[in-house]
Amino acid sequence: MSHPKPIIIDCDPGIDDAVALFLAMALDSLDVKAIITVAGNMPLAVTERNARCLVELAQRSQVKVYGGCPRPLLRSPLFARHVHGDNGLGGMLLPDPQVPLQPTHGVTALIEILRQSPELVSLATLGPLTNLAVALVQAPDIASAIAEIVIMGGAMRAGNVTPSAEFNFYADPHAAQIVMDSGIPLTLIGLDVTHQVIATPPRLERIRQLQNPVAQAVVEMVSRYGSTDQQVLGLVGPPLHDPCVIAYLVQPDLFETKPGYVAIETASDLNLGRSVVDFQGLMGHLPNATVALSIDSVGFYELLLEALSLY
Image (tube, rainbow, N blue to C red; front, top):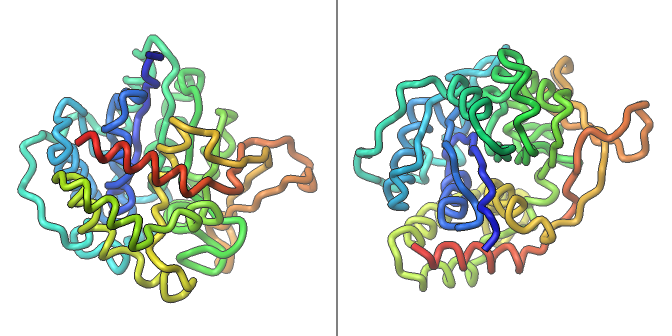
């Protein structure tokens, strides 16, 4: 068996974050060094509590959870209660977690883990990029300790919070631009791809049939998720955005990708948070990211089912 890939997950749980965490914590091919939360889908106090609840439900209480930045770098906080419910988990109630919140700030933990790691670490970013941007500004040396950053963010076509912007980049566009400029190997998985992994009723039914507590939690949360997307976009179920990042880390062959230059709009009110992707070199820059174009959704759901069956 190959050596598990060390990863740090930076997230804002969030229903699709929850599914991503369950996927990552189930797989022997990944070694989750830490879960760091950020304000995004919900305020920080909610995202860190949710992460601890999910770790406990997954019976992976050895995974440490840290709280990071409570607000974006420059703009006002933006939350998504209308998408994820008042508690961020679609209203699914979980008992108060016994898993402690680590006393170290998430940004400090990120820096320390990277500096102390004997091997390069991959970062899975599922929310606004505030924590990572602050860490890169505070400790630029950590860039050399990062194998790759796989980002759920952006959209080449329509956004999901404005016509131009996807939520994570709109929530903290300045942080996103800092990460894009970091020179670290980046993979960008945007809405154009994540809208291809639809949790259709037959797929949810297969998860329900697993009949373990984690699979049941996934069905309960996902059943209450993404109704607006389904109505507006004509989808037959909610898209699972964040688990695509974990899928890429373990099975990149599920994706079609292309190198491109990505810049984030930080000045225009109309296009704030828009990810501009240049595949042709029109902006005069070499590629700074691997941009996902499509995903094998059947293969993705086979991976998810296999992982959830392990609980």
